[in-house]
Length: 122
Length: 107
Image (tube, each protein chain N blue to C red):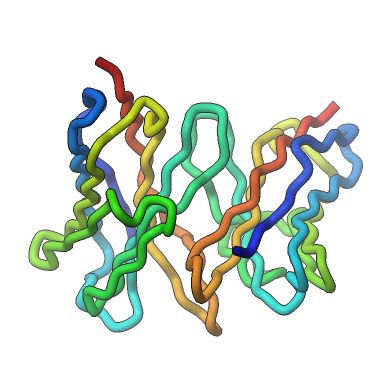
């Protein structure tokens, strides 16, 4: 059974750096083809993809956030860490991590964490 | 960059069929995935690869994709189907693209 859970601060101040951890079980990021993605959703707004980490440590970032976002993984702990710098109130959102499935040249997300609401406010 | 367009809202009478569209340039050449999100909950994968239902998803939910429009069809709509629905594609450059979401209201 695959599960994921996000953890980290629920409030940060403007200009601070946000660090969120996705802890998962039921799969290993050392397994060929697997990946973990981060997606966020501002209150009342649509889903927005942030970043993707592949099993081979390859990473992809949203072009609009590439300069502020970094992904790292700790395979032994089954964790993926998202770091986002220079936080702004517009970054207030629920942040989700999800398990990426790749089939037939496409990718989608069958397993999601519960999400963590991060508020950026002074 | 590639964009997906969804109607902001769709209404359907109880027991009738709802259709939610996802528009994109030649989207029929891509695989489209659909997610359902109820208030306060994480999204749930509803349809993958245009028309495939993951285990546990009722047959009332179906998908199709052709030309410039992908469609999520919800048959015999129930009150419990009220939710936001998002389409998603994979793009080699932008990687992950979501539509803007559609709020389904069951009347």
